[in-house]
Length: 388
Ligand SMILES: *Cc1c(COP(=O)(O)O)cnc(C)c1O
Image 1 (spheres, protein in one colour):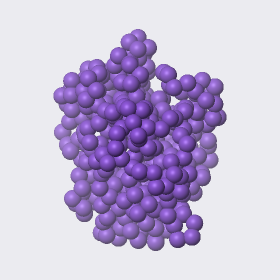
Image 2: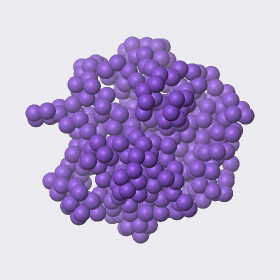
Image 3: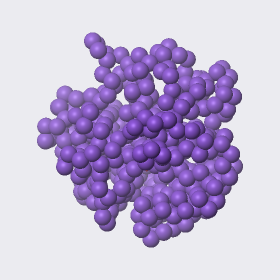
């Protein structure tokens, strides 16, 4: 199959107010400031997936122009590993771990960067810049190298050392800053406006989330084109959670999902956050439509240290619409469940994955998740990235 036969035209529209936006230099909606989404005609069930053995297998659902080859390092197609002992430990019927550590640079951030760098290269940007809590910087450094484009990364000084080393090993220009990812974001935007580099911050451009969708396509296909009862995602900026939700919408629109009577379209989402930085959990508990910035975010689960996520309104909507749960885990609980995840399964659990399991266990104990539920938990990164 030639790559041109995968391509489908897409348009950009606001995720909130549906205002159309031009494809060139896409950022936020100029009418309301919310993130833009790529929109396609539905991909009907039976449309051939590609024969690639990476996330571009789902290219008919992705923003790839006619005749274009993606910037790819073999991202995606990660295993979905069932664990009976973890299901018993948290008190649900069946539990699978989707192990995103098995991606280039060891996190799901590879998927988003593969999609966004593909678009940035096609649009002719002179370079790429990202603010990061760690893994996004490592992933962008790798995909920039693959695309032959210069990369600038702004990361907190407190980012785990192995991640900072990876960023530099891939030849990116790393600036260590005092502060958190929000502070890094301001510097990255200033750098983008000085240099014309493509600013790849979470949900500030529409393409990273397109790559994240592939976590949802794979999960559904691995379960036999079904949706589980519950998806647990350790949520920082929200791109992973939003990507899975958007993928399942698109599968449902094309009739891909099976079910005994009527297919389940969306699972119940569990947004897992660290107790030291939980803007979404706090806003959801208060019944708010948007989140207030978290002052002084502190957690060793670096990917969750995002005090003011741009996807707050979309995440809160997903939680409301799916009878979801937003919970938190203490630093000790994150450590305990990271160890339990790794030692029970052999998966190299990241602290974010441990946080997800801890929040799931608490939600089951509180009766918010049914004990006969089938649950998919995302282990979003690798433990090795955090072992200095
Ligand atoms: C970025 C990251 C997260 C948070 O993902 P969002 O898409 O920003 O919500 C979770 N875990 C790890 C390991 C990460 O790198």
